[in-house]
Length: 246
Image (tube, rainbow, N blue to C red; front, side, top):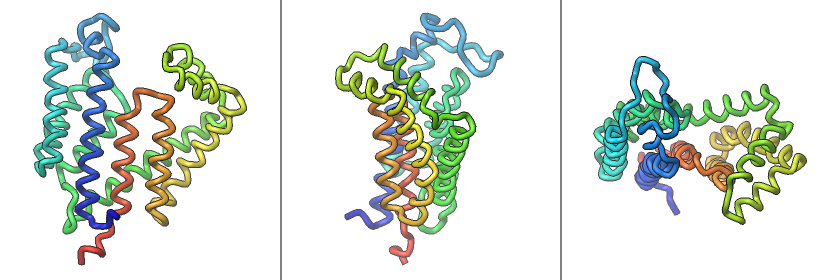
């Protein structure tokens, strides 16, 4: 049974590093190099005054992130996070993604203050970050009427049209049904509201709900694995009971 802070710390860095690596894998599978070569989009970056750089620079960006992910698991947290920060600033200057911004925030936090039993500031900030993400996401869904299931039904129907795996196609077809889409949409909003409460009051149940929610999302959407792994990593600080170290 994992109870000691240091065991959780190692698992946290492992899962976070996997989030960084999985973003690289997703970029390769989605032919991000094609974007930089001008094969997919002629121009796609946040700042109009920054030219999109060639694929060779993209591979340097990926190499920096990979090296940073490795260093996280070799107890070189600050240097590893610094490499990840440089890589993600490069990437975000070319194409904005919410999940990349979240990983960048986590990397900046750990670069300033790695997980520590003497200075708990990063622990508390990472906890706050997870609560903020879920709260804003749930409120936005409510305001935009996501719980009526229409958005989810349309999204899954589109994914169904491009999916080749028969098992995933069957799941998408089931979720795309209007009634099922509404049930799943309401369930998602409810989970996003209650997960922070469970993480504070019953952290083990809260972590289990985080894993359940993001595992379910990843069955249907291929490009969110980095986000899911980051959120799972962010749930672990809620299990870090520093009273055990006294």
